[in-house]
Length: 239
Ligand code: PXP
Picture 1 (spheres, rainbow, N blue to C red):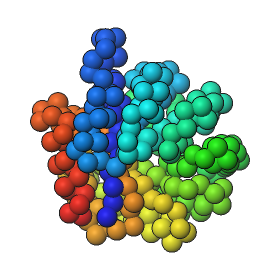
Picture 2: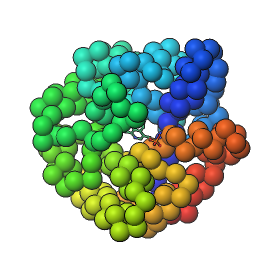
Picture 3: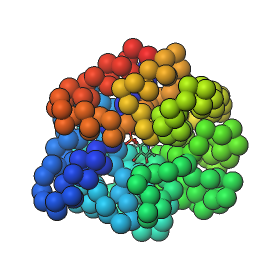
Picture 4: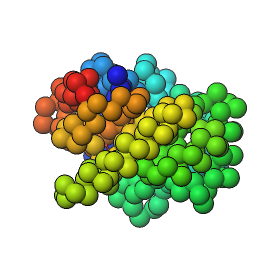
């Protein structure tokens, strides 16, 4: 059965909109864990637009499931990861002007740089996930450079309004997930997933974990964090 890692970046987005102390992503993480999630995800961006260094430091001390740090493979971020030792680092591409992560890392271009980052992190006891588009070549390179986990980008599937395009996106995702599983990689999936699109993954048992943020935090504003996380967990358990 797949697990659920809850991304609490958007709690920090709301806090940073007013530069105040609330709402606190640390409090949201505690609630998410109490509701039964399997991990907490934060993306520490170069521009610190939502999650702050203080958040990651406190989360490192209090998260009881596992802490997944999303970050670009820059020397600054690798230094922070080596010091804080999250359970997992997810390497993502990062552009200053993007609203959110726009695509997977292109390993055909950045294979050497990402391979070196993976090695450094693993030598320090950190498991590494690489966020990639659902493309068999990307999966094969990820395997070659010894990542522990691939996170398959589900954004295109979740954004499209066309049923035909949705089924094409889904079939690419299914193929990438099955290939990664066959290569003995752990498989995560995420980006843009919500309480509707999660149902598309019914019967796809090769997924080890979903990484979901925006839809859960948005629902939490209406129903509370505990209920929002629990409802997503129930949907994942019934896939
Ligand atoms: N996975 C990765 C690699 C991401 O960058 C993000 C967004 O921070 C997510 C998952 C979660 O996406 P969403 O907030 O759309 O659920």
